[in-house]
Image (cartoon, rainbow over all chains, first blue to last red; front, side, top):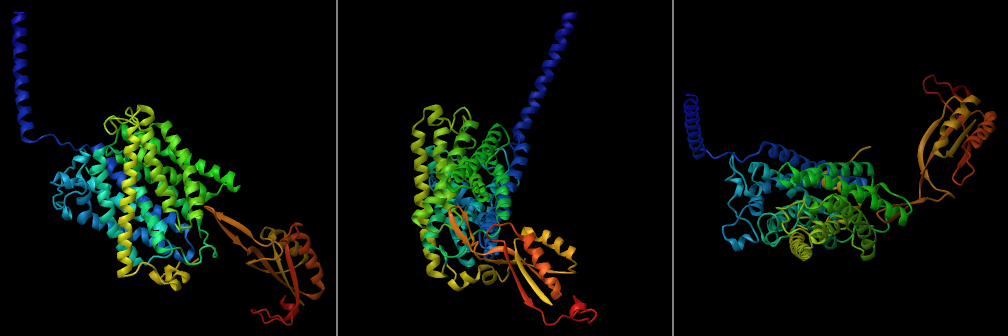
Length: 448
Length: 112
């Protein structure tokens, strides 16, 4: 009796389970589960806003404080203007070229499709396979903020002497012809990413790229009028300290956000970022203390930015010890690039776009090859790096990445600048340059 | 009447002002100025770029006093603004022809 009852209960339960399964199957067939993860999405919207904050007001103030008082508004206008025009261009075609897949696999090695013109196919529930747990709208926005800051960084090299009209054309053409293809090569499914280049958040795509463009731009433009004779000291380093600090805070969106999710990977990237930044600020400060006798405020914040740059490609692939070494070394490397090499060769990279972003980005990319660990990012760096996993070949791949970005960017930037120079002209007259860009280009000045 | 113009190191202002108040000086004008003398300037270094700053910040004090007070005022400023280092500044004394207090129309020593 007892047994038969149990059997009956068992049979009943089995029937119920079968019925439930059938219902569940029917439900799955009707609507597959939504892959969108709300935690990831929340973090990525936050990250996008943080990265936007890096450009306005972070970078704007960082650069604005370093120029002379007569050019501060013009410098702020460059960051703000770049933000606006790049947002629109990214929506029109930039995202499509960088982050969608071209139907022809051979062409896709170099450039994405044009299908997302005006973001036409992007619907409410679109998801880009490159970031599978967040809405495509968020991925597009996140990458947009990267596309904004990269060209805006170049402004450090051309400060005090480019026409605003030429600047806006330069930003637009450079975004579409240089940034978008390189972003596709490394992150969008192109040849460098396929080759195995490790660039977590943009050591080459963003910083080496912007730095190289800065180097070419300051060579094409020539030095500022009065360089070497006039006092070109920063007019207000307080702005620069505020700007650098906003960059630092915003950079957690940049690096930890580049995990495209909120989890272990993002957490390690955030920790590595903090450690490398502080240690680079310390090492720049110490070198300056030894060589120049005094630890300057500008030196400390420059070191911090150099650390942020160098850990950018490595965060997400390295552990805390790797981050420390990357930070300590890049502070010294960038100090010599910005202070010694610039003077020695004599190019007028006014605010050190090349010395900090170019050199720091290249150094970070190579260090990523050295310190990347399979144990830290098994899916992103399946072969690991040189020092921990014995994968010496990674150093070669990283070098390809650095060399390819440098060469393509340098040639592309040169052609764009020459084209603008031949059509509307790049540089303001020396009269305007001496009198100041604020009053002449924008009709405003800073009072008080 | 004398107009006493003193160029002093900025951090000495409070001591000078207190000393002059004790002497009975009723007012003074202070201006932030820049200049150079034997102290020359200094250099500032930004990422290796060295700039010579030839004009250093100083304060200019102007005090108008009766002729008989001038010596005491000059002594007080000299005593209080002195550090013994190059760059302590200078005192210039000029004769004052005429003074008017705008509110009342009083003139000369009544206006001081």
